[in-house]
Length: 393
Image 1 (tube, rainbow, N blue to C red):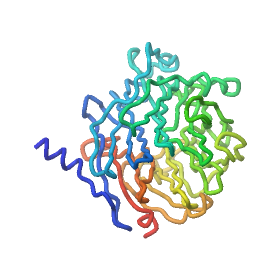
Image 2: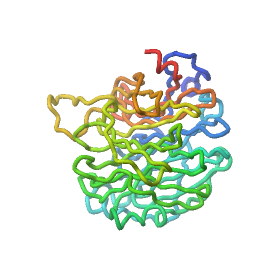
Image 3: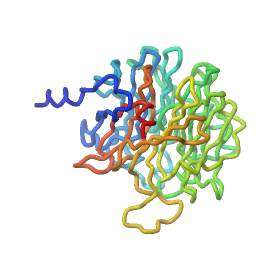
Image 4: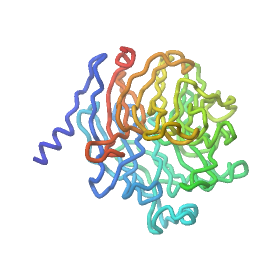
């Protein structure tokens, strides 16, 4: 029976028909392999067309509990998947973030690995960044398509510490999701930094990017892309994409009362960010979203839960969270100026997501969804679909 279950879970059609409904496969399920839940999905496709799907594996539901980072690989377009492997082990000893200790956010002996981000390099390499205790950032690299990884090296001092004069952060995080490589070769990773206020220690935050111009050997901070203001309240988790003209778009979550996504543009993905604006089309229930540029076109995809209602609350307070459901992918044919098509991926509970594209143009979305037994964060699922499907309704 167990072998049959494994075979059924591994089955996947390689090439979805144009316009066909998305094909879905669950890669991680709550309360398996000694983890309570799996969250914070990320996905990239390497030069060799290998899919790497990665996430946080949590011993508890807490953002600050004991968390490992796991990954699964597929070398056949998603037909079969490797067993989960742990992909991050920072050199010790590891100290707890003082914010977690002060606010009693988890047990004293917990160790939090958080916010995995990968970049698929045009050379075939894969860059991997992650944080430890929301206060240290590490870099690792794979030159064999994700099979093995170099010993992580800490980049906090060069990539994050220079910001302390502007924003004296106590909490940092990469992504989550994926970073990008620009046509110039520059590596860009979206990040956010917080003063550590609020009940969860993530308050008073700003959004920005870090970048590397030497293939990941060294990392530097860019300009703060979206500051924390009265109108742009606590911008944090963000995503980036290179547009057809070479500019870089950063799209951020915030607690702003407009409940719309914040967008800003940069000529190089690090500096000279434009004045942030709210995109009226992209609703913000206060949840992570993902951005993906389709190579060689002006086509841009965006995913997040398309919902502003709150169960059992007729008039929810502006700037507070909404129910995470109705995960939707939107399409733009003009580099994100307007959004011409949208389709629902998951109508029920659904939250964080990340987008990638295979060599044949098949789009992948790796996302959080519920299950019949566990309605909250029950599964991490990969769905496959085509741009034609997005445009067919």
